[in-house]
Length: 348
Image (cartoon, rainbow, N blue to C red):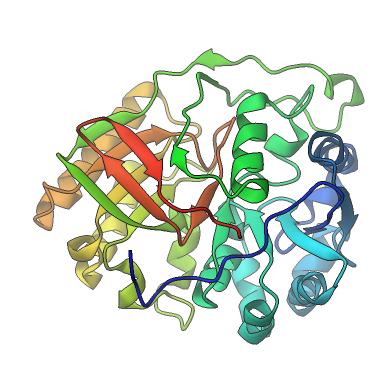
């Protein structure tokens, strides 16, 4: 696994550490303060850490929209604060690409710290990867970390393994899942557990044997914002990569996802990638999910990649509970054994 693109790994988190919540996109923390405070409290109780706010973490949506530079400053503040050992996205949104002109990659490089988030945080995850760091695709403060009735054991294990324990081994798959929404503004619902359904588990769509590669990717719609910009990863990052892609709660059409993937194909990404991992999509009926899987297989065939291992219905992205994926780390996709195995830890 000698590789010139080997990323820098941040120090592992420990009980007693101080983590910082950042709002780099929307003002969800201001809109739903009860949910935000529950997420911070449950992180502290579950992992024995202290969670503080970045200077503008609780600003409202309108102010954050008008001030993308201040959002980037919050990221810099958390990175340069010697008390802070890890950074967690408060929630997603849709315009964090607007902070990129103000983000200083040198500050990311010189202050390697855990950064975790998903959805629109794909922008910041990509900035960390571009700066040569491992970045953690995982739950936000206001999603699974603020889960009604407490962080579920599946999420706790994945966060603890990836951020605290420098763990390696076969990825665990959730036995149940949910996309039920209980209103975040109703204090009576904070302790009410959502209805979970039995999970059908991963869907192994194609591929044989075993391949290995570095995890790369994020939210497929957000990655579209970066195509054609200086922040789009270079060819060396896609070569041999295990692509992990998820869709948002807006449930892009199967046709849209196929168009996104054809763009990857025309760039040559699909020709050089090792495997493709697809998250369980939110707000898709069972037939739509099946059509999505078939559409992905169709696009891969268009580019001569009938050999590429593809695993769908995985527990990351816009699904609950979701696992943590350390972007930049080696993962084995073992089609014969139907296992995904993390080959190296994301922290030191």
